[in-house]
View 1 (tube, helix red, strand yellow):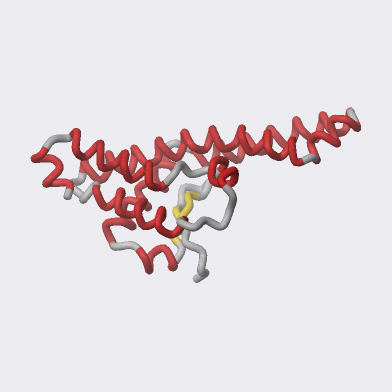
View 2 (cartoon, rainbow, N blue to C red):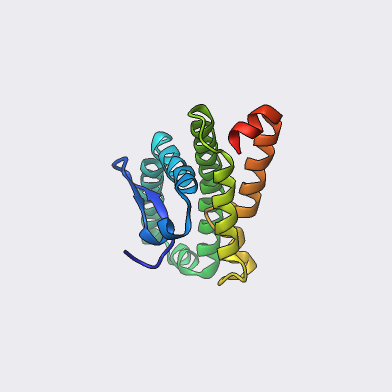
Length: 168
């Protein structure tokens, strides 16, 4: 029990959901979030991220040990910014794929797919008046929650009126 609002997939395939997230989401919204995390497990995102981080660390350490200039650049804010940009674009793709997995799972099993949009809308409201700068938001690993909610609504609408009623 912590105050952080979060859920995440672990490399061993388990999913962790913080109690504070459970406090603010409906059961259907939690199902959407858990489906998203299961999408990360199914796509091996956590394992891939760990492998990638280990490779980057090894390459960076090897380069830093060979050159003082490389060491200074790697330690600088510019080096950190570059690494953040590389990591963020990779993570956004994974996040979008996990969203798609959750949507497809919920639709396949006749759950309310719009609950996934509702969960993203709640997360967007929590981030309003954000704690970080616009650059922090740009580099965040998760795509904008409002855009994610809109994408779910658009996808449900494209499914057609009879499907949208079933989804809602």
